[in-house]
Length: 278
Image 1 (cartoon, one colour):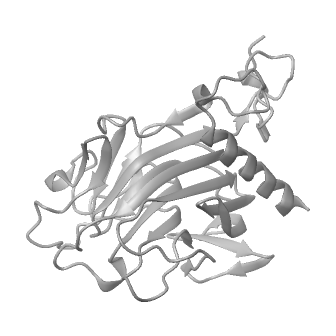
Image 2 (cartoon, helix red, strand yellow):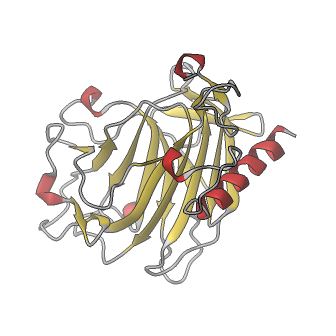
């Protein structure tokens, strides 16, 4: 029953988001002003890059850039990859209960020297540690990852999988030890745009959606030491695959749940009474 309720919530948010440009006084609908546009369509001033073997804040070889309203992961300045894994962290957060919507596609060829597994491979990292906590040589933050994969034109290759760097999850009540677990999504070949949604309820539950369809669900997010992982920051990857994002936005599901408050929203699932405005 809980699963069905969460699926219905995510479906409602998907539909209301698609119609968010329409004015409405119905507080049960998601209003456009409620969304936090993580990518503003202009620049990456609200983001912080961190590459392995490079200090926080250095956008190595201009890998992350914005062109024509699109956030791009680009390797045209590289002779070869050289193990320089990177992430671009949004400066806001941490977040605990939220919905992320993004549109992405893979374009072009993998940079020379990239590992085979990284072809057409990116990811939305969430509940991640802050980039300031990463050692100089480290390229992979402790986090959860919604892994994004593109097809090779022939073989099946699911997207919106889950990977667990420094973390663990359970599925259907069973703890999992495998690092990456496939979703039930279709394969998306070529350079087509794909819409993903990520519904996160603290450490309790996560759901992955692709083009509106639920493709993965898991629960009980923990660190490798067993500590519950219930919040963190948001990042995207640079793992040798040229990638484009034309939307990345977040809807905070934690807020004032007092119906008498001016900032009450019916879609909140985690109460933050200190945020109420009367």
